Length: 434
Image (tube, rainbow, N blue to C red):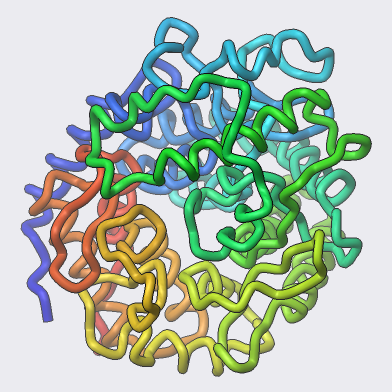
């Protein structure tokens, strides 16, 4: 079992990363590669900040809520226009200020997984005095409800209650093998000239290819050019993702807790969480023993064994939890005791341990898997091993974006905020099994 790093050293280093990436009202994912505010990053970052600075954890979440559109959506990115040339596509690409439903601050029209209500509840629960002093829950609750209503009304594209993503970026797992078949139908010839400032901060072998970026930009142009309208425009990429919907269900459970705390009825949130958990069963693939994505355009399941199919373990009462636990502990994922959970089945012919979402282990995903094991009371020793490894690799490699699951070698950018935040969270919450 990997030894836990010195708590004082981990705390000091992690807090230093979060301070370095602080932009005055929010935390950048990484000051070089990601110079704006990202939506689900802020959720994960708040989960770490809650242990060291409750007011800043609250501010982190309220900052992303300041980018909320009139239709309830929380955007993938809120832009710092002074750094528009440092990331592509920037605010000038999206032109959100020309749309009447968009906020005053410049944003993307796309969204990201909804972990915000869950983070808000945990921030409150960790320091209720600070939360109550600031009136935090009362302020964020109606806005979080509106965000979830947006998903229900505007993103139920398959008609079965699950939210669809209309771009790989919305999943947070940009070049996951889950999207390969759907992306193969998409032209890689956008009108926009593709710049790659990301390659100044990470090697080409660690990032999506230029051809993939061509398809990403083509899809983004399509969505932008019909006004980011989910109800009237035509989208060429529409998929239901297990992780996106599992985080939505988990956040509905958090909204139930928030409602209770505010003296409101939790019933609608509990019911929706149960409906989402049940609807996820339509994404289960019995041969793989995992949840998979569904291509809404074709109606077919995408039979790829990825980390996304494991994350629904964060939900209590998950119908296929025993089978998913078995697949998780099997040879494709944890059977050979990798340092952290790979993002793709290690037996796959196109498994790439250094290539973004096509094999490397991500700190947020391993954190979610640890939680899933705890939720189901399963494999306590393995959950603890993963927690120790996560903290040790984070500290040893200057908080990398992701690592080779087998060797632990760091990849992507360094001083990555959610890596620091989630290592900090585990240091405060992880308890060794008896």
